[in-house]
Image 1 (tube, rainbow, N blue to C red):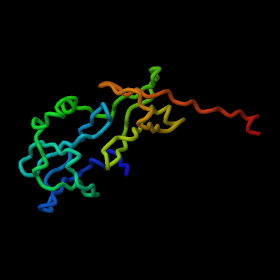
Image 2 (cartoon, rainbow, N blue to C red; image 1 turned 90 degrees about the vertical axis):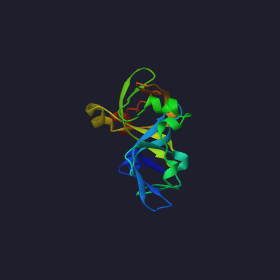
Image 3 (cartoon, helix red, strand yellow; image 1 turned 180 degrees about the vertical axis):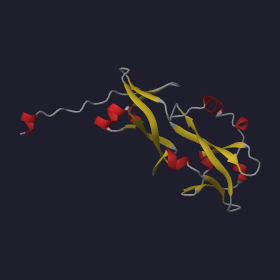
Image 4 (cartoon, one colour; image 1 turned 180 degrees about the horizontal axis):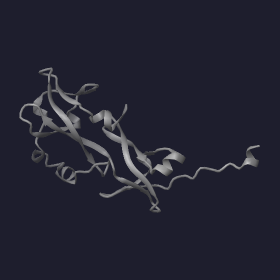
Length: 172
C-alpha cells in the first residue's frame, strides 16, 4: 500500500507489543538516495528523550496510530549502525529538493513522496511547480522509473513529454 510522507511521519508513535504502550515518537526518515529506500526512522525515545533509530525491518505492523515493534530494545543509537553509517551521515531529505530534466530544464521542487509500506521503497515523488506552471499544468507526479539521477543538490528526471496541441480546425 502506498502512503504519502506526511501520513508516514505525522505524529506517529512507536508502539511496543510487549507493553502495549508507546515507546517513542517518529521524528524523520532515513532515506538512502542510492536506491530511494527508507532504511529507518529517527525516533525520540519516550523514556530518556534520546534520539534513537528504528530500522524498517524491525517494524511488525503499520497502523493508523503508529508503528508496532516487538519491544523497546529494537531502537538503537546511530553509532551502533555501522552498515548505515554513510547513509545516516548524508542526512538526505527529499522534501524541498529541486527537480530538473536531463536537459537542465527546471521542473520544480519535491513537495511530497509516496512510499510502499511493505518494502519502504519510495515509488513516486510529487513535484510542486512555480505558480505560473501550476496554473496551467497543475502539480507533477514522477514515478521512480523516470528518475535518472539523484545528487546531493537535485533530482534529475527524464525529459517530460510535451502535451499535443489540438487546433480548432482539427477538433471540428
